[in-house]
Image (cartoon, rainbow, N blue to C red; front, side, top):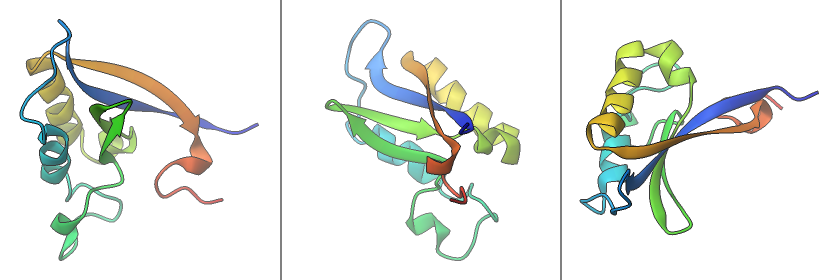
Length: 107
């Protein structure tokens, strides 16, 4: 039986249904979180997204997918991302994916 990990999806839609602005908010948030990664920050790590905080688009809605390993690595970083969502009234949902598909998972 495969192990499952719950990821948090922060959606670029407010509780009242409005599209969150600016349009590049997901890339900005993920960029701020780029140094929080397995093995810690490395030279040049700011040039790519962390596997624990990834911007994406689902059905035309900007989202940031946050992996629970971020919480284990740095609780303050996790709180920052979750507080960003709460403070801006963004929709947050959980989704499960097989652990083998998670960042850093071994097949």
